[in-house]
Length: 78
Image 1: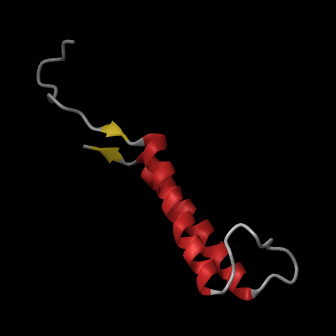
Image 2 (image 1 turned 45 degrees about the vertical axis):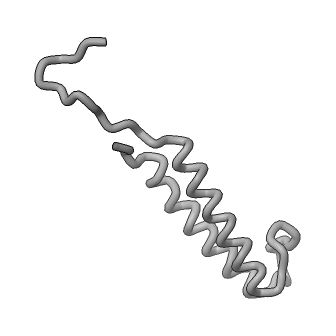
């Protein structure tokens, strides 16, 4: 494999789907802990009408966390 003169020997690679997936996994772990702190089990409660406020707060935080994972998917990895 040849490279152009003056090009760096090593280039950054996009972390892509791996970093995005790891980030989302972390969000789910934290959400599970949030549910447990409220006395619930993650994945067993629907967020419909009448859902406890703690569950809604956990879900909102999870959404914000997962939105932040988008940056991890585009971040360069040295």
